[in-house]
Image 1: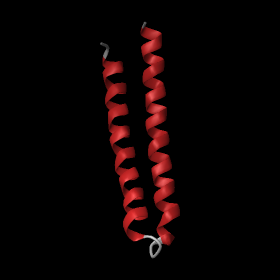
Image 2 (image 1 turned 60 degrees about the vertical axis):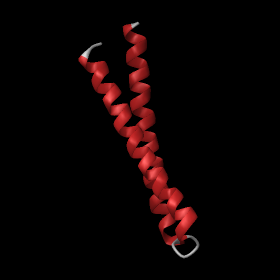
Image 3 (image 1 turned 90 degrees about the vertical axis):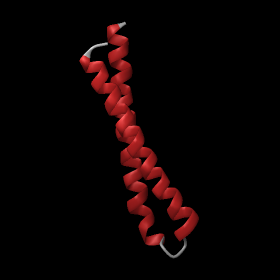
Length: 70
């Protein structure tokens, strides 16, 4: 496997971990701190969206690279 593919796989794993961490923060907000902490919803939701989008973009790059090398 090329170094580029290894790096892309590493990026996907890192971004997936970060997205999961953000999702847990959003879950904790919903389960434990609402309705008192409603002011945090937009910030945490936006951060979660961005983390998930970063994972998706990294994953798409990896899938494209696998397709090109096949």
